[in-house]
Amino acid sequence: MVAVDQSFDLLRINENEFFMPSFDVCMEAESLDKTANLRLRSCAKNELQKFIFTDEGKIKLEKNKNLCLTISQKNSVEGGGGNPVHLIRNIELQNCEMDLSPYQTWGIRL
Figure (tube, rainbow, N blue to C red):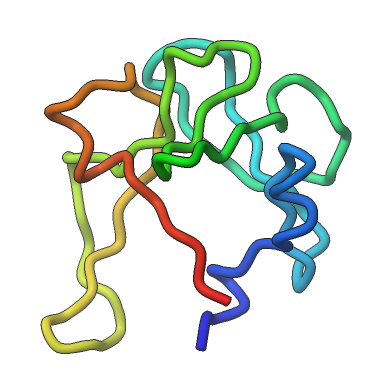
């Protein structure tokens, strides 16, 4: 089962919006630039909240399709459980690149 703090509304993803119903917030980029961090904000349907989930499992910023949602390679913190222990990492926008594919490929669990 997917935890509420990791769960987005599938119907809204199909509308290019990553909405977390348990918190009534949307994923938003800080800017349209490379290395922009992601944050959770009230849904405003602005260009910083529009993302495309591709058939290849990439999440791209709609206004800059060269940028992919990427798990940061820097600074991880051990989470509260799991075996092996889960790592908490930041998420940022980076150029979509083949060598970053393991950090830029996402999936959907129903």
